[in-house]
Image (cartoon, rainbow, N blue to C red; front, side, top):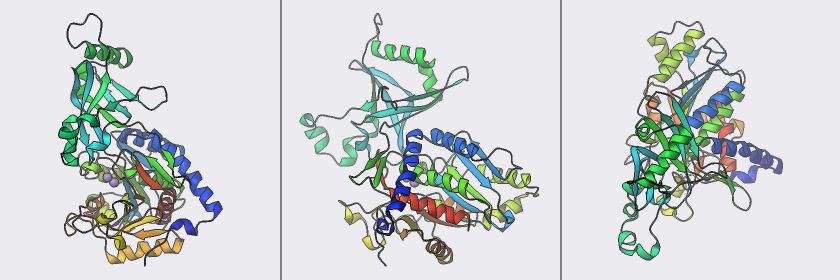
Length: 450
Ligand code: MN
Ligand code: MN
């Protein structure tokens, strides 16, 4: 039953195609460092591919508050017979600026952060960081910020203690306590404003913010500013087989989903692609999948098709649907193999990973896909020659995790988790294998036209 490396099954020409596909993936990652930037990329791409906001059209999309997008394309069959749905999330672990972030100490201007999602805090110190986001000014106007991406931009950094002085303060502590959340403080400036009596360095950076962006200190209160790694996506390995980049959880799924829905011509069943926000903090809020946006969009789309879309019709449509919860999985780590039960784990390079269930401590909080539906997906992938593997996240009771699957399963649809395996998942620089990204894309295409 143990699967083998998918690379073995690929010809030289196949590998060229995989590498070509991943060049576009890398440029997507570089332009999509936040959920808002990812949503914008998706909207632009959908628009270029004939999707519009007109619900009477064949290909429709809508964005919700610039952070989540849903795209629909009509099929041959009546929507009430069920849709083909794939959902991916476009938020990623990061550091948000606090609402009153700026202060001065020891002649430095500094920014306080509040981390978002599951991070290992020690991974965020002493690496180049970028600042992205939006600020709503006092008069209601919006200004966008993105600093740290182009080669001549400055970057930001969180200080770490030199090893010479870390013995008591850090080295004797648990790894999870050596860098605390409140210590994730960003270096922001060092030049004092001439003539300022108090907080001269802070005054100097505030002047820059005023001149460059027209923002005042109070404007931080109505801002969403995110500190993200300033790294670009790069090939990893002497054979260039892998990709290192921030945010591949879950933009690996978002990119492949975007390509798949645009390329699924004349599908049997109507197709729905959901690009969700807030998965990393429980899918809460008005941009997470638990919000009413999906039902509202569906109502408008069905109405646009001339269907009398009452609540019963929408419920029936969702109940009869089949779905993939597209999310990445933790691949067997070469140096920490003990956290995996290797007979039921996923491996880099063995294709898209199907996870029948998620959860922790005895499948608690899981979506557990039915055997019948799992079998259907298996037949579909085997029939199309997609390279896939089956895997769960880690050994029993080692930890665990969930995805959006359970929130869509409440509608009664069939749904199963699947996605590319990653190394260094949730770190500032996650690693994927190019073949797994490409097989994920192939799997989504096959699913949409099934
Ligand atoms: Mn994820
Ligand atoms: Mn995640």
